[in-house]
Image 1 (cartoon, rainbow over the protein chains, first blue to last red):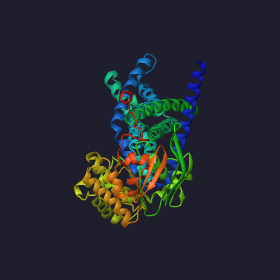
Image 2 (image 1 turned 120 degrees about the vertical axis):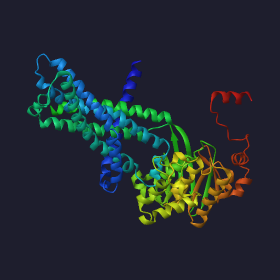
Image 3 (image 1 turned 45 degrees about the vertical axis):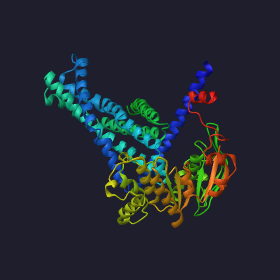
Image 4 (image 1 turned 180 degrees about the vertical axis):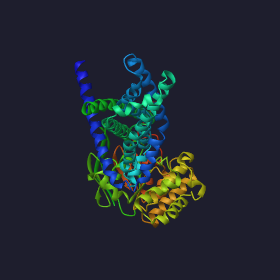
Length: 257
Length: 263
């Protein structure tokens, strides 16, 4: 029993380290492909559209509800001790450094990461990736690098938009349910605004974007079996991305605060 | 020239290739026969460098494929065309884009001549109708996909062509067209060809030489006529589709195994 448990932990550790090494190698190879970015600009733009523009409605919806809920929560938790003029600041602080990047990251892990692993997994299983290799077209340059860079750039943009919308969502609740005016809600935000908040948001969202696309690409490129393999890859990609987002969120918070 | 020297490959401890020695000379058309699971596709993948042999060496055009990293193989792969068993068309691209991609990527022909080359290749495989160019792979029949796959492979003027089951799933007329095309590429353009197939009619049409792979080993190499008249038990059984012989059926489930046992 004990031997089996030790063996399971050992093999799990080895496979996790192998996966980490493989993903990092893929990351390095994708970065090396940046020298072709101008030549392959159409690929990068297409991925930016697929990852960024296509995810926009969902991200804005998530952002709006996050802001609305945050404002209710702030009022519920601190309403007795905090003047209403700080509602906007409370929402802003909660959303910009934590809820905006993390919730957007988790949603995109499902929306972008899973579809990426399913797409690349299907291509791998149906030999489409092999077909690229055989025609001397580097799949990392053609498939992985554009997705990774698009994720790295578009996720921070999506997070900025989500934070912006969440503030307005919060204002909507504050105005309609609590009678807080525009100047009252937004007036204190400049006072408590720190550039560091923006830095933390950008570092987190760029990290989450890289994680989502790297994990999705790596899992997809290593998919095996038939349709079942693609399904497994999709689940694996989401679970791994979500866990890594939460781990890295803690790690970044520890480093930057 | 394609050369495999004593190539061995196992998966999960099960040997698939056991010391395969095979040479395909310049301009030759070799057909590799063997039942499913005999190691034919693994042989092709070793030649392409998609997988590495556990032992032995693979040379293509004087380059040791088995000793190179994937990125180092790209210059060589520009000389190789491959028709995949299931065509492996890129399903996010239409027919035209599938054939165009490698031409555009490698600048095989001047940019303004790419459309002509794409249409020429599609016409060669019997898909000259312009309305087909804009169709997505999901809108094509299995045979059409295979023909687009062939057009894509030949578009880049390969020196070597590898065919994985080129006529499987095609009707007899289309099989004949594909066979003739493979033969023409070989005879007129001197494209060195290695084909794996189960289709004996196809093999007889396109082969200069037939090689038989059985349980990961080459058991026969000779002309079409030699294969037809061979008294090697494996070759004889395969060529004459004889249920009795050294090639044992693979049972797919317990029920089939039981039925066979009762028989």
